[in-house]
Amino acid sequence: MAFLSDTLSRVKPSPTIAMTNKAADLKAAGQDVIGLSAGEPDFDTPENIRAAGIAAINAGKTRYTGVDGIAELKAAICAKFKRDNKLDYTPAQVSVGTGGKQVLYNALMATLNPGDEVVIPAPYWVSYPDMVLLAGGVPVTVEATLEDDFKITPQALEAVITPKTKWLIFNSPSNPTGAGYAWDELKALTDVLLRHPHVWVMSDDMYEHLAYGDFKFCTPAEVEPKLYERTLTVNGVSKAYAMTGWRIGYAAGPVELIAAMRKVQSQSTSNPCSISQWAAVEALNGPQDFIAPNNEMFVRRRDLVCGMLNAIEGVTCPVPEGAFYVYPSIKGLIGKTSKAGTVIEDDEAFATALLEETGIAVVFGAAFGLSPNFRISYATSDEALKEACGRIQDFCATLS
Ligand SMILES: Cc1ncc(COP(=O)(O)O)c(C=O)c1O
Image 1 (cartoon, protein in one colour):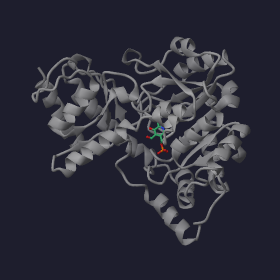
Image 2 (spheres, rainbow, N blue to C red):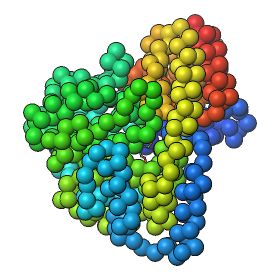
Image 3 (cartoon, helix red, strand yellow):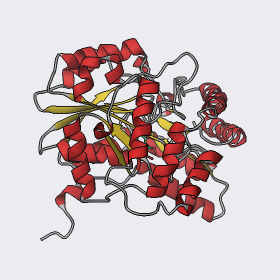
Image 4 (tube, rainbow, N blue to C red):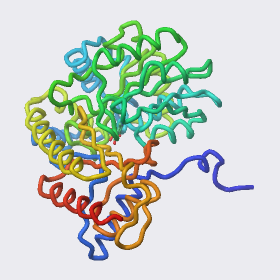
C-alpha cells in the first residue's frame, strides 16, 4: 500500500518557487544573481498598516477569532466592494482566509465532485490547475494567445464548456501576462456564461489596483449583474498593499457557498492571523493614496522592460495593462544554441541557460501553460531591471 495519497501524485510543486530556490542556491554559491521570478512588490507594507498590526498586538487582539474573519474586517470588505466595484454584499456573504490562495482553495474544495470540470484560461497562475486536481476536479484549459493579447475569445470559451463545467476561473489583470480585460471584452465572455446557467465564475481580482494608463479594471458580477448569484469575487491585500507575508485574502458570494467554504476552513486552519486581520482593516479603510505613485513606478518599469526586450531579435513582448509581469514570446530563438552549448529547445531550456550563464532568474512559460514564453516580474528596482534586461539582450545576441 502506498503511503502518500494518489491525489498528491497528480500535483506538481510550484515551478515559480523552484526557480526562486535555484536562484537562491546559485547566489549562495557566489554567483551574481538577479531574481525576476518572485510575485511580490519590492516595497514595504505602508506605515499606517504596520502600525495597526502593532496596535493589535499591544491591545491583546491575539486570540482566536471567528473562523472566516472578524466583523470589522468583513464590514471593511463590504465597504470596499461597494466603493470600488459597485457590488452590494452583506457580511454573511464574505469569507476571509489566509491569503487569496486559501480562499480559492476553500471554494474549490467546497464545490468540486470527482469529474467536475473547471475552465482555466492559459497562461494561468500556476496554482489553479493543481488546486483543481487536489480538490478532485478536472482542469480544462483554454488558450489565450499572444495574437489575442493573452485574452480568451468568447468563441474559445463557448467551445470548452460542457455539461460537467462547474467553474470558470477568471483573472484580470493576469498573472503571468498582465493582460486586463476591458469592460466590453469581459461583457462578451459574461454573455457566453448567460447561455450556460450551470457554470459559476470565480473571479480572482488580486491585481485590481495594479491597472495602468487607460485600462479600467472591472469584475464579472459588476459587468453582468445577472451573474451575481453565481459569482465568487476573490481579492486580497497581498499585492496592492505589499502585504504578501501577512496572509489575508477574501471573497464574497452567495451565502450558501460562503458557509460551505467556512466549513472547509473550520476543519483546516480556522481563522486567519488575528493581527493581520486588524492590519487589513486599516489597509482597506485607511488612505489609498500610495497606490497611484506606486503604479507610476510600475508603469515606468514596465515600459523599460518592454522596450529593452522588444529590441531583441526573436523576442516579442506585448505591453500589458496591469499587474507587475510581462510574458515575452521567444518563438524566434527556439532551436538556437547558447555560448555554453545549450540548445534552446523550449522555454525551460531558455530559462535554465539564462540563469546558469547570466545569473538572471525568470520563470519559463510551460509552467503557466503557454509556450514558448517566459515571465518576468518587474517588481524590482530600475537598476536591477536595466542590468537584468541588458544581460538578457547580451545572452540572446550570442545565440547562434
Ligand atoms: C493571480 C493570483 N491569485 C492569487 C494569488 C494569491 O495571493 P495571496 O498572497 O493572497 O495568497 C496570487 C499570488 O501570487 C496570484 O498571482
